[in-house]
Length: 391
Image (tube, rainbow, N blue to C red):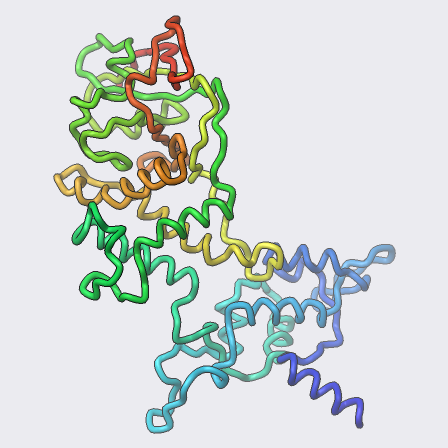
């Protein structure tokens, strides 16, 4: 009797009840759970799918699995009784979305379970209780980052473009507890945390194109490289009008897709890097890890935010006059990584070709040379060859 009471007290304290069964990795769809079970196998029989082995252990104790599930749930969820007010007149929680164990296990968590008995056991283990987001009256970490980014976008597009770093408390633009300019430092921290700065090796080939209406193409850096300062007339995704940069891609097909002019022909210039370049690589952003991944769970908020940020960063912008406004946030981000982080450029997913990689290098026409010309430490690209292609 004492032993049963002690077990009950332990289960109440930890928040879930023991299940005297074993489960194999194949009963779950989540890769992190699969890997965990494979690392904790202790039995040769799975009580749920019936898989068995005479020679090898293939199933882990359900209690071990439940401990991981509980730890994962409590990393992002909590009991509303501990933090949320109850309105007895209305008969509901005050200002917070609350779900029950069934919906949490069945729909909120991506367990990837097809066996109903396994679902029922997990749900019964946690009992019939309510769940709410941790710190329910605050924004979740990824939501706060997104909120700050949206506030920053609004600030630099419609309120303060040149001295925004001095704007600290303007309630008409954003809530004063959220300092939107700080999103640039937060973004920099995320880039460092995820290791998104990479070296583009000396000798890497990059491609840049120019449209024209006749078969006669271009063959010189002055025509195929970045425009000079006097001819940098148009706003681009990463640069304001008047600021020349090298826009290119890692392959011909992406160059053709990125050119929006409806011309008959395109000259594609093939450039080779003359030194290693440090780039912000936004083409290799890792997937958001599973909540059940102990080693990488802490990366969920920054990666969830970064996915939303990339939707804005790579969205198609129509050249209807508003591009001077719509490009401003990405231009500011670009200048931050150019002058604060001291990077040489950005590699990013093409907005016009799925799977294509576009790039911008922070260089001018003077830093590009023709093939055969003498180079020096100031030069970054050499134009190797050019070819005309029909559209």
